[in-house]
Image (cartoon, rainbow, N blue to C red; front, top):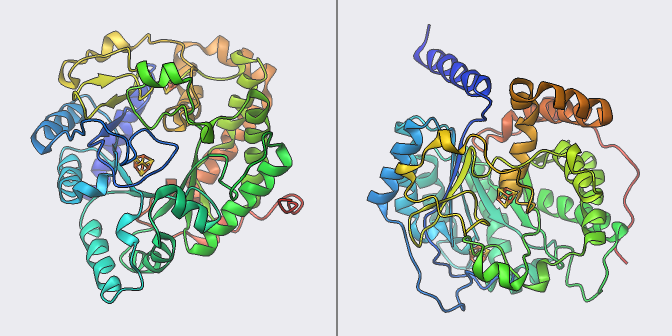
Length: 426
Ligand code: SF4
Ligand code: SF4
């Protein structure tokens, strides 16, 4: 038997053991730096915000990675700030994480390196960048796209010209076996500049439809959306450790708007699943909608602080997530995973990085820990398990969103366009 096959079998056994212990494969988000060169109004780390910037550094991060591997963590994300401001370090640390046995390594960029696409030497610069990344085991690279209107995106980011550069860069990356992923942080301008006070389901449906068409036309083959991370001003200042949570009105959506927004996203995704590999699981949106409709028992609590954690660049300490900054769990090396096993029954925010996988893994853990509760839930909400199964089948067709694999048109063909065409935004 080949070494690769043996490794795969060993990993699968590890995952099965994790579920048998009532846990899910661990995920660690490491904020490598809070330094940034963009001006996004929706984020506290924008360059114009005056606060002492911090970076974890290679040696400290290696210690954290080695501990994560020892504890059996399966996934690692390097976030920022802007991680590409420390690109060499992030590449080296990704290789280190891979050597330690961590499989799912991700990072992202605001795309600033793609500015200046009209200048001589742009293509060579991008090819060198893609070569460098191709030599690492990084599986997914998210590129932020804030709006389907390129001008709005570039104004919000303070990064003129990046969209044209991204469009030129995508095929150069694909030639080197890297399929960059578009990442929308939902904000009120995501479908073009909006002055309207109240946004409704028709607006959101048309907006998501436009967004998916837009990023597919740019040349992306993977897309994700980040659910809004607005928090009350006093919470953003005192509680959130990850400054990507914000109290800016651009990410504020009322309860009624959130119901409309998540419903519209849920309805729009199937119409684009054939053309784009869409990361967002509909089972998770369905459960989130249950929660927003007051049926919290028909949604799963978050694995943040149980199996998923956040390490902050400012103090190098561990937190249950980027939001629960009042719960400093200390250095990651000293984290007692066993004492986290019970965890909180937390649904305080919609952070999809933790909420989506929590929902997807929920039936597996519940089967072991709370089978009766699971049965009760499935009886009351059979639609959830249908959507869950559909998501798993779709994830398989998408090679589990492996950004180092080209989309398979034969596998995606089954996910034909469904539903009526969406009306244009008025
Ligand atoms: S959202 Fe990202 S790119 Fe924008 S200011 Fe925040 S860290 Fe920087
Ligand atoms: S629901 Fe939000 S606040 Fe609660 S653990 Fe998950 S990410 Fe953190």
